Amino acid sequence: MPRGLHTARRLTSLIGEHMIPVQGNGRTDGYRAPRAPRDRHRHRRGLAAFLIACGAVISVACSSPASEFSRYARHLGMREQVVEGTVFHHVVFASGPRASRTLHVYLDGDGTPWGFWTPSADPTPRNPLVLRLMALDPTRSLYLGRPCYHGLAKEPPCTNALWTSARYSEAVVSSMASALRRELAGTGIDRLVWFGHSGGGALAMLLAPRFDATTDVVTVAANLDIDAWAELSGYAKLDRSLNPARQPPLPPRIREWHYVGGKDSIVPPEVVARGTIDPRRVIVISEYNHTCCWEAMWPSLVANVDRAGSPPP
Image 1 (cartoon, rainbow, N blue to C red):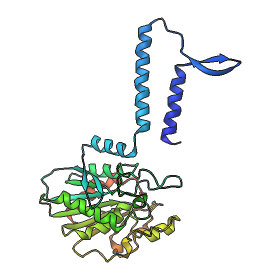
Image 2 (tube, one colour):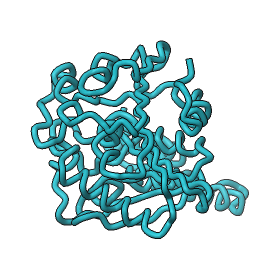
Image 3 (cartoon, rainbow, N blue to C red):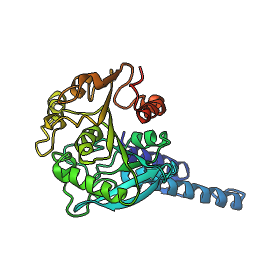
Image 4 (tube, helix red, strand yellow):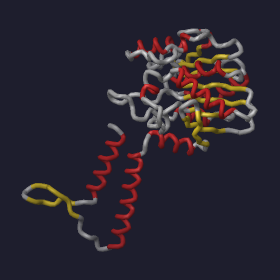
């Protein structure tokens, strides 16, 4: 059951507990207030508490995915700001020590590009997995949002193509690159490590070679061949997007680490292994799937990448 419908039904149930049906013409056709209790002050206090609770329920039910995502980021102690890209704006979240010369850049998945049969009004991810992973990373880190995500979908020149068929297009990639360059200006950062989950991994492969400071790319459950992924999933091809599998290999100076869950039915290992990447850089974690249980291994994975050693067994 959708969250809003469940909340509405629960709220109706709560109201029903405080109202009594009025009998008229042999049927229930209205409500009247219950009899006043003997302790009027106690009743008033209870009613006030009930109304406050109802307001909280309604507030949660009406919160947008973007506001929920931002709220969770603040809960994790992250700093939020809006950064200009090319012609788009980008929401970014930052964490970790500001003085570090290494920056870990986190790229999220596609979120919710589609509703029931039409493009979603807000493609912001509903599952803040990437925020949770970033919270486990002690290094200076930046969550780089996509154009039109995180409450910006109605800003011109956003169109729903930017989170559907053109979600990995040159317009998206170049604007994200521009936003990151603004963030890097004057920071002294000389090492970039990219972490991308799902569709964020595809974007990491497209963005990494555009920065001379890139040393490593880490993808998790990433659709690195978007044509193979669309065919396997029964989706229409993302014909306005760049396909990482059709791009030149990354420069030898960039180390690659491509993790995938052995139980991932959304992006199975054979999709990750397609394209120009070295199959030896694909690490299959047999018991994991698309979202579970990457947090368990994240601290050791990050530490290993920062040491630039071999992937953990």
